[in-house]
Length: 432
Image (cartoon, rainbow, N blue to C red):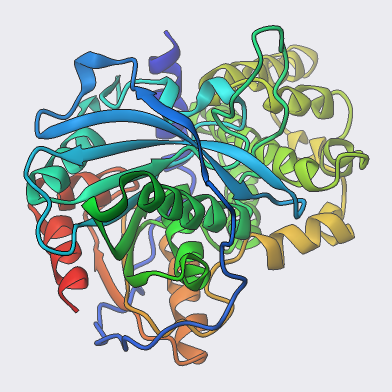
């Protein structure tokens, strides 16, 4: 039931917007000089305890010698040191001279609560929309087979260690906060190097999809934090230009036929993601009424549940909100756009998040960047990513921008895992 609802939500969101064919397929050869300087990770003894086996043994990649969950120290969003978790997979092959290279994998959106963390869930998923999805599992297996160590951070605030008596999360995941995601990755790479020592080299790359594509671009910006040999990033359908996506989605929903099922489902999906964004802001501004800054009552109370519910359960809560509204209006969603506060995007906290804290590629990046974007993606819409690439190129950041009109938000990653393009990209980056 949960998986089917998620699939329906995603289908509904996919019908919100028509794809734009204005993507620029031109590929640039990226420069390889280092990025702007950032604070270097100087955390002492970054690995906490001994990594423990990943509990889902049926999802162990067959070419991995070890599949473990590592707890590590990172520099958190508040400026304080905090603990985070990451999956680490090591090859069965002997380390080459100089050690195995490291590939950091950044996952897509799952929620902001600890129980949503990838390290606490299966690698192989199943849904009505995609069927059995082995994309991440297959990708990791191909990497370790090639002789790469894979570190897959849960991100700050997801999967964090807790005491036996602890009933609530210590920290909310700062959803789509670029620096938090970036430091989650860079500090996980440093911890992996610390744990495995000379078995791994100083060389690393990053790849990610959706929220993870966003995180990969953040890691590119802050890569020098590792003080290691960073080689480049591959980002699939990276979240970006959130204000533009929200505005276009709201307009599309208002213009839909009142009785259209996609209209109902679109509101559910949009509000679910907006609630996670609000939760991300709350992690940085814990004393601010962020939910009520964005949503009117009673929707703000539903949005607060983002702190404890993963994607599908939270969507079900918003389904209840829509249902209650339609009961009062005899089945109509006319006027439902009024659930949000007028002018909420001008609130200083919201404005800072949308325009600064969440937006990737705002500074010149001199290391290789590859971005994949589907022309049929109606979640991270092509218009947004086209604008992102144009903005980055205006700063003289060189981007290898690859588009295909047939790729949607899911197939853009799946297809390029199955056809070996992602592995080829990783090999090329590491060879530079």
